[in-house]
Image (cartoon, rainbow, N blue to C red; front, side, top):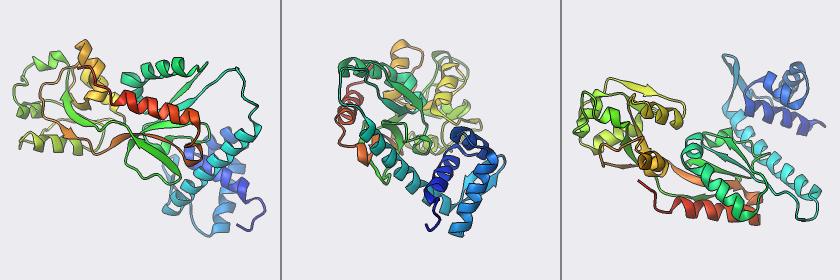
Length: 299
Protein backbone atom coordinates (compact mmCIF):
# COMPACT_ATOMS: atom_id res chain seq x y z
CA UNK A 1 0.00 0.00 0.00
CA UNK A 2 1.40 3.38 -1.00
CA UNK A 3 -0.32 5.41 1.68
CA UNK A 4 2.20 6.31 4.45
CA UNK A 5 -0.32 5.49 7.20
CA UNK A 6 -1.49 2.17 5.75
CA UNK A 7 -0.75 0.13 8.88
CA UNK A 8 -2.88 2.44 11.04
CA UNK A 9 -5.74 2.15 8.55
CA UNK A 10 -5.46 -1.64 8.60
CA UNK A 11 -5.61 -1.63 12.41
CA UNK A 12 -8.86 0.38 12.25
CA UNK A 13 -10.25 -1.94 9.57
CA UNK A 14 -9.39 -5.08 11.57
CA UNK A 15 -11.10 -3.69 14.66
CA UNK A 16 -14.29 -2.74 12.79
CA UNK A 17 -14.33 -6.16 11.06
CA UNK A 18 -13.98 -7.96 14.38
CA UNK A 19 -16.53 -6.01 16.47
CA UNK A 20 -18.98 -5.33 13.64
CA UNK A 21 -19.66 -1.63 14.17
CA UNK A 22 -17.95 1.74 13.86
CA UNK A 23 -19.04 2.91 17.31
CA UNK A 24 -17.72 -0.18 19.12
CA UNK A 25 -14.46 0.05 17.18
CA UNK A 26 -14.11 3.71 18.11
CA UNK A 27 -14.55 2.85 21.79
CA UNK A 28 -11.88 0.13 21.62
CA UNK A 29 -9.44 2.39 19.74
CA UNK A 30 -10.19 5.48 21.89
CA UNK A 31 -11.02 7.67 18.89
CA UNK A 32 -14.23 9.21 17.56
CA UNK A 33 -16.67 7.26 15.35
CA UNK A 34 -16.13 9.90 12.68
CA UNK A 35 -12.40 9.22 12.63
CA UNK A 36 -13.03 5.49 12.26
CA UNK A 37 -15.51 6.00 9.41
CA UNK A 38 -13.08 8.32 7.61
CA UNK A 39 -10.20 5.85 7.87
CA UNK A 40 -12.36 3.02 6.55
CA UNK A 41 -13.49 5.19 3.61
CA UNK A 42 -9.89 6.19 2.86
CA UNK A 43 -8.79 2.54 2.94
CA UNK A 44 -11.58 1.50 0.57
CA UNK A 45 -10.74 4.40 -1.77
CA UNK A 46 -7.06 3.40 -1.75
CA UNK A 47 -7.86 -0.24 -2.51
CA UNK A 48 -10.62 0.58 -4.98
CA UNK A 49 -13.01 -2.03 -3.51
CA UNK A 50 -15.81 -2.09 -0.95
CA UNK A 51 -14.84 -3.86 2.27
CA UNK A 52 -18.18 -3.57 4.10
CA UNK A 53 -21.89 -3.49 3.36
CA UNK A 54 -24.45 -2.36 5.90
CA UNK A 55 -26.70 -5.04 7.42
CA UNK A 56 -29.17 -3.26 9.70
CA UNK A 57 -27.14 -1.59 12.44
CA UNK A 58 -24.08 -3.73 11.81
CA UNK A 59 -21.47 -3.78 9.10
CA UNK A 60 -21.00 -7.02 7.17
CA UNK A 61 -17.78 -7.88 5.36
CA UNK A 62 -17.77 -8.27 1.59
CA UNK A 63 -15.75 -11.15 0.11
CA UNK A 64 -12.84 -8.75 -0.39
CA UNK A 65 -13.25 -7.62 3.21
CA UNK A 66 -13.21 -11.22 4.49
CA UNK A 67 -9.98 -11.89 2.60
CA UNK A 68 -8.30 -8.79 4.00
CA UNK A 69 -9.66 -9.45 7.52
CA UNK A 70 -8.10 -12.93 7.66
CA UNK A 71 -4.67 -11.63 6.65
CA UNK A 72 -4.89 -8.56 8.91
CA UNK A 73 -5.90 -10.61 11.96
CA UNK A 74 -2.98 -13.00 11.48
CA UNK A 75 -0.53 -10.17 10.84
CA UNK A 76 -1.51 -8.15 13.91
CA UNK A 77 -1.51 -11.29 16.06
CA UNK A 78 2.06 -12.01 15.01
CA UNK A 79 3.11 -8.37 15.50
CA UNK A 80 1.56 -8.22 18.97
CA UNK A 81 3.15 -11.53 19.93
CA UNK A 82 6.56 -10.32 18.75
CA UNK A 83 6.23 -7.05 20.67
CA UNK A 84 5.18 -8.95 23.81
CA UNK A 85 8.18 -11.27 23.51
CA UNK A 86 10.59 -8.38 23.05
CA UNK A 87 9.11 -6.46 25.99
CA UNK A 88 8.75 -9.54 28.22
CA UNK A 89 10.94 -9.40 31.31
CA UNK A 90 13.36 -12.19 32.13
CA UNK A 91 11.74 -15.32 33.58
CA UNK A 92 11.09 -15.09 37.29
CA UNK A 93 8.99 -16.68 39.97
CA UNK A 94 6.32 -13.99 39.50
CA UNK A 95 2.66 -14.44 38.45
CA UNK A 96 1.94 -16.71 35.49
CA UNK A 97 -1.24 -16.57 33.46
CA UNK A 98 -2.91 -17.82 30.28
CA UNK A 99 -5.95 -16.75 28.24
CA UNK A 100 -8.06 -19.37 26.49
CA UNK A 101 -11.17 -19.03 24.33
CA UNK A 102 -13.77 -21.80 24.75
CA UNK A 103 -17.28 -22.48 23.40
CA UNK A 104 -19.71 -21.66 26.26
CA UNK A 105 -21.36 -25.11 26.37
CA UNK A 106 -17.97 -26.82 26.65
CA UNK A 107 -16.82 -24.38 29.33
CA UNK A 108 -19.90 -24.93 31.48
CA UNK A 109 -20.19 -28.70 31.15
CA UNK A 110 -16.54 -29.80 31.10
CA UNK A 111 -13.63 -27.44 30.61
CA UNK A 112 -13.84 -25.12 33.63
CA UNK A 113 -12.93 -27.97 36.00
CA UNK A 114 -10.13 -29.06 33.69
CA UNK A 115 -8.74 -25.53 33.64
CA UNK A 116 -8.44 -25.36 37.42
CA UNK A 117 -6.63 -28.71 37.39
CA UNK A 118 -4.23 -27.47 34.71
CA UNK A 119 -3.58 -24.24 36.62
CA UNK A 120 -2.59 -26.24 39.69
CA UNK A 121 -0.27 -28.56 37.77
CA UNK A 122 1.27 -25.73 35.74
CA UNK A 123 1.60 -23.36 38.69
CA UNK A 124 -0.53 -20.62 37.17
CA UNK A 125 -1.47 -17.77 39.47
CA UNK A 126 -4.33 -16.66 37.21
CA UNK A 127 -6.10 -17.56 34.01
CA UNK A 128 -8.76 -16.01 31.80
CA UNK A 129 -11.50 -17.90 29.97
CA UNK A 130 -13.43 -16.05 27.30
CA UNK A 131 -16.45 -17.34 25.33
CA UNK A 132 -16.20 -17.92 21.58
CA UNK A 133 -18.79 -19.95 19.73
CA UNK A 134 -16.70 -20.16 16.55
CA UNK A 135 -13.27 -19.27 15.19
CA UNK A 136 -14.32 -15.89 13.77
CA UNK A 137 -15.17 -14.56 17.26
CA UNK A 138 -11.69 -15.06 18.71
CA UNK A 139 -9.51 -12.01 19.28
CA UNK A 140 -6.06 -13.50 18.74
CA UNK A 141 -4.33 -10.37 19.99
CA UNK A 142 -5.26 -11.35 23.56
CA UNK A 143 -5.82 -15.12 23.25
CA UNK A 144 -3.06 -17.66 23.83
CA UNK A 145 -4.96 -20.79 22.83
CA UNK A 146 -8.53 -21.69 21.86
CA UNK A 147 -10.79 -24.69 21.74
CA UNK A 148 -12.69 -24.46 18.47
CA UNK A 149 -15.69 -26.51 17.35
CA UNK A 150 -15.28 -26.41 13.61
CA UNK A 151 -13.53 -27.73 10.53
CA UNK A 152 -9.94 -26.80 9.61
CA UNK A 153 -7.87 -25.58 7.88
CA UNK A 154 -7.32 -22.16 9.45
CA UNK A 155 -4.59 -20.29 7.60
CA UNK A 156 -1.82 -19.02 9.86
CA UNK A 157 -2.81 -21.29 12.75
CA UNK A 158 -1.88 -24.70 14.13
CA UNK A 159 -4.50 -27.14 15.38
CA UNK A 160 -4.69 -30.53 17.08
CA UNK A 161 -7.76 -32.78 17.07
CA UNK A 162 -9.29 -33.44 20.47
CA UNK A 163 -11.91 -36.20 20.73
CA UNK A 164 -14.15 -37.29 17.88
CA UNK A 165 -17.73 -36.20 18.55
CA UNK A 166 -20.73 -38.56 18.34
CA UNK A 167 -24.21 -37.14 18.93
CA UNK A 168 -27.21 -38.77 20.63
CA UNK A 169 -30.49 -37.31 21.93
CA UNK A 170 -30.77 -36.10 25.52
CA UNK A 171 -33.78 -34.89 27.45
CA UNK A 172 -35.02 -34.27 30.98
CA UNK A 173 -36.25 -37.36 32.89
CA UNK A 174 -39.67 -35.72 33.20
CA UNK A 175 -39.95 -35.53 29.41
CA UNK A 176 -39.05 -39.21 29.16
CA UNK A 177 -42.19 -40.10 31.13
CA UNK A 178 -44.44 -37.38 29.76
CA UNK A 179 -47.20 -37.79 27.20
CA UNK A 180 -46.54 -38.64 24.45
CA UNK A 181 -43.95 -41.05 25.84
CA UNK A 182 -40.55 -41.70 24.30
CA UNK A 183 -40.68 -45.43 23.69
CA UNK A 184 -39.29 -45.55 20.15
CA UNK A 185 -37.15 -43.18 18.05
CA UNK A 186 -40.14 -42.07 16.00
CA UNK A 187 -41.71 -40.66 19.18
CA UNK A 188 -39.19 -37.78 19.11
CA UNK A 189 -41.22 -36.22 16.27
CA UNK A 190 -44.03 -35.61 18.78
CA UNK A 191 -41.79 -33.31 20.83
CA UNK A 192 -39.81 -30.13 20.30
CA UNK A 193 -36.45 -30.77 18.62
CA UNK A 194 -33.80 -28.36 19.91
CA UNK A 195 -31.26 -27.22 17.31
CA UNK A 196 -28.01 -25.28 17.51
CA UNK A 197 -27.54 -25.50 13.74
CA UNK A 198 -29.88 -25.28 10.75
CA UNK A 199 -31.49 -28.63 11.57
CA UNK A 200 -29.09 -30.78 9.54
CA UNK A 201 -27.80 -32.83 12.49
CA UNK A 202 -31.30 -33.85 13.61
CA UNK A 203 -32.23 -34.81 10.05
CA UNK A 204 -29.15 -37.04 9.91
CA UNK A 205 -30.06 -38.62 13.26
CA UNK A 206 -33.66 -39.29 12.19
CA UNK A 207 -32.35 -41.00 9.05
CA UNK A 208 -29.92 -43.10 11.08
CA UNK A 209 -32.78 -44.10 13.42
CA UNK A 210 -35.00 -45.05 10.44
CA UNK A 211 -37.56 -42.38 11.29
CA UNK A 212 -39.46 -41.16 8.23
CA UNK A 213 -41.85 -38.81 10.03
CA UNK A 214 -41.02 -35.10 10.00
CA UNK A 215 -41.29 -33.17 13.24
CA UNK A 216 -43.55 -30.12 13.24
CA UNK A 217 -41.95 -28.41 16.25
CA UNK A 218 -38.41 -27.09 15.94
CA UNK A 219 -36.57 -24.60 18.15
CA UNK A 220 -33.36 -23.03 16.82
CA UNK A 221 -30.76 -21.53 19.17
CA UNK A 222 -27.65 -19.46 18.60
CA UNK A 223 -25.54 -21.62 20.91
CA UNK A 224 -25.53 -25.23 22.04
CA UNK A 225 -25.71 -24.08 25.66
CA UNK A 226 -29.14 -22.56 24.97
CA UNK A 227 -30.35 -25.86 23.51
CA UNK A 228 -28.99 -27.81 26.50
CA UNK A 229 -30.69 -25.41 28.89
CA UNK A 230 -34.03 -25.94 27.14
CA UNK A 231 -33.50 -29.71 27.40
CA UNK A 232 -32.72 -29.40 31.13
CA UNK A 233 -36.02 -27.57 31.57
CA UNK A 234 -37.94 -30.39 29.90
CA UNK A 235 -38.81 -28.41 26.80
CA UNK A 236 -37.56 -30.87 24.20
CA UNK A 237 -34.71 -33.07 22.99
CA UNK A 238 -31.23 -31.90 22.05
CA UNK A 239 -28.44 -33.73 20.22
CA UNK A 240 -25.41 -33.72 22.53
CA UNK A 241 -22.23 -35.76 22.75
CA UNK A 242 -21.23 -37.80 25.81
CA UNK A 243 -18.26 -35.45 25.91
CA UNK A 244 -20.56 -32.54 26.84
CA UNK A 245 -23.41 -34.41 28.49
CA UNK A 246 -21.33 -36.56 30.86
CA UNK A 247 -21.90 -34.60 34.07
CA UNK A 248 -25.58 -33.98 33.31
CA UNK A 249 -26.09 -37.70 32.67
CA UNK A 250 -24.13 -38.71 35.75
CA UNK A 251 -26.20 -36.40 37.98
CA UNK A 252 -29.46 -37.59 36.41
CA UNK A 253 -30.46 -34.14 35.19
CA UNK A 254 -30.48 -35.49 31.63
CA UNK A 255 -31.10 -38.96 30.24
CA UNK A 256 -30.56 -40.63 26.88
CA UNK A 257 -33.83 -42.12 25.64
CA UNK A 258 -32.15 -43.86 22.67
CA UNK A 259 -28.66 -45.14 21.90
CA UNK A 260 -28.58 -44.41 18.16
CA UNK A 261 -25.64 -42.07 17.49
CA UNK A 262 -24.31 -40.11 14.51
CA UNK A 263 -20.86 -38.65 13.97
CA UNK A 264 -20.94 -34.86 14.29
CA UNK A 265 -20.21 -32.83 11.16
CA UNK A 266 -17.55 -30.90 13.10
CA UNK A 267 -15.02 -31.69 15.82
CA UNK A 268 -13.22 -29.94 18.68
CA UNK A 269 -9.67 -28.71 18.07
CA UNK A 270 -7.00 -27.00 20.16
CA UNK A 271 -5.86 -24.03 18.10
CA UNK A 272 -3.08 -21.46 18.42
CA UNK A 273 -1.30 -19.06 16.12
CA UNK A 274 1.57 -20.62 14.14
CA UNK A 275 3.91 -18.16 15.83
CA UNK A 276 3.00 -19.65 19.25
CA UNK A 277 2.96 -23.35 18.32
CA UNK A 278 6.42 -24.01 19.77
CA UNK A 279 5.74 -22.12 23.02
CA UNK A 280 6.38 -24.69 25.82
CA UNK A 281 3.33 -23.62 27.85
CA UNK A 282 1.06 -23.76 24.79
CA UNK A 283 2.42 -27.23 23.97
CA UNK A 284 1.86 -28.48 27.52
CA UNK A 285 -1.65 -27.07 27.64
CA UNK A 286 -2.55 -28.61 24.27
CA UNK A 287 -1.30 -32.02 25.41
CA UNK A 288 -3.22 -31.68 28.68
CA UNK A 289 -6.51 -30.79 26.96
CA UNK A 290 -6.20 -33.59 24.42
CA UNK A 291 -5.37 -36.18 27.09
CA UNK A 292 -8.36 -35.12 29.21
CA UNK A 293 -10.73 -35.01 26.23
CA UNK A 294 -9.87 -38.60 25.28
CA UNK A 295 -10.24 -40.00 28.79
CA UNK A 296 -13.38 -42.15 29.39
CA UNK A 297 -16.40 -39.97 30.15
CA UNK A 298 -18.74 -40.64 33.07
CA UNK A 299 -22.25 -41.47 31.88
